[in-house]
Length: 181
Image (cartoon, rainbow, N blue to C red):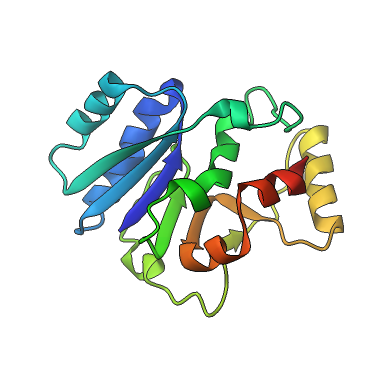
């Protein structure tokens, strides 16, 4: 199983708990790809010590945050620059990976996700859950309304099973940046 997440130093404890919960509930080897511009060897050793009892390998994929435009929307206490690091997946992930499960670092996996992980893509780029949440702030409601009015489907981007082969064929970092800036 391949799990991908993005994080900064503040999210090390939360991400470690997410990884432990995934390992406890899934008796398989898990390769974890950590996309970060901040983590160093000491941080990785700390996270490895947290998951040492499990069949899990951590791979740090360093991100140059200077590649991201200053025009990207960043909302303090809501979206950090790290939410955009997944735009680099087509070039930063190993090319031999056919599928990867993106999980936000603040998720708890409370049962097996093997069936979900092994679902057929049926020609789709990814599998995700539609999100029609009613947000509480005016800005969040405006963002959601804008997403629905474009004709695109709004989905929970914190849990995405990605068809890496197909995504690599269709998208690259620049195509994502062009879409959001």
